[in-house]
Length: 169
Image (cartoon, rainbow, N blue to C red; front, top):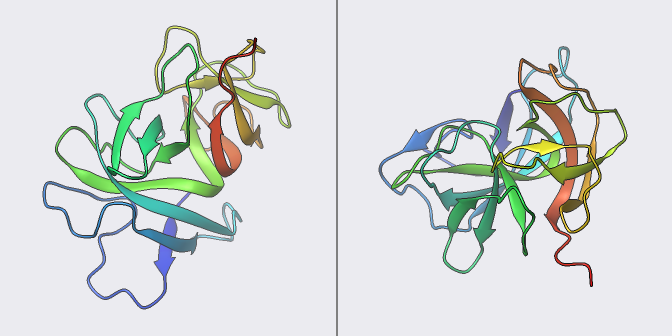
C-alpha cells in the first residue's frame, strides 16, 4: 500500500521516507490517500510525525509519546497508551511518519483471521497476532487481511487511533 499526503504541504517529507534531519514539528499530523486505489483501495489514512527508535522496520507497531514525539517498539507483553504503525525503517535518531488511522500494513508473522482482534505477538516486540491474550489487545484495531497480504510477514489492519488495552485486574 502506498499513501500520498494531501493538503497544503510544500516540500513535505514523503510518508514512506525516513530522515536524519527533523523536517516537521514532532507530533504533526497529516491525511493521506491511497496512491494506488486500483490495486489496494485502502482509501484515506492519517499519519503522525515522530522520532524513530532502534530496530524499527516498515510495519512495526510502536508506542509513542505525543508530548515528546518519541517512539518505542510496542512490547510483546502489552502496555499502556497509544500505538501507531511505522511507514518506514525509521531507526534511532531518524524521523518519519507513523499511521494512526486507516488501513495499515503491520508486522504479523503468524496467520491471522480476517475480522479478528489485534493482540501483541508474544516474544516479538513490534509485531501483532490474533491470538487472544489478556492485557495484550490493541483496541480500535482489527485484521482486514490475513498474513502475506500485502507481502510476506505483513497483514493489513484497520486502525482508528489504536491503543493498548492495559492491565486487566
